[in-house]
Length: 204
Image (cartoon, rainbow, N blue to C red; front, side, top):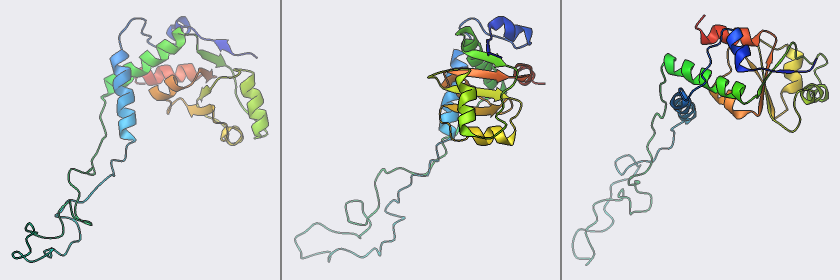
């Protein structure tokens, strides 16, 4: 059975609140920024002059050399010394409240529905677990386009068949997020995925 293109009306019939105006754009931006920031490790760290393993020994005696005084071997301008104004370990994570998360998700899904990029199909499975069979299934839905397949769950054989396909991602309704919805050219909802998303959006 060929995949059917879903509309905003289909989403409304599934009790998913849709956004047809400009609301939610900022929420989507905030959500994407937060997700990208939360992936940053923030582990870049340099040692200051007080942290380096220096002996503190003066470079030369205080007087009589004709050179400027040297107080130790840890200053930044000395080889092996500390780093001035270098990066320090920090936490880049950002928090987004539940209302903003929900608004961003609804807005992203609404825009993809509005653009005709969301499809529906009763089933999506690859019983033999072969990559070739998986590619055949995907080609029935899209050609020359990346695909996000969303379902309540996938059997092990289907997941095995699709794990090496870069342009196609299998994602459960519980795990799919705003970034997933925006990244792929087409989105395929399988079976009762729309109803599951409605429950998630409505907080049930």
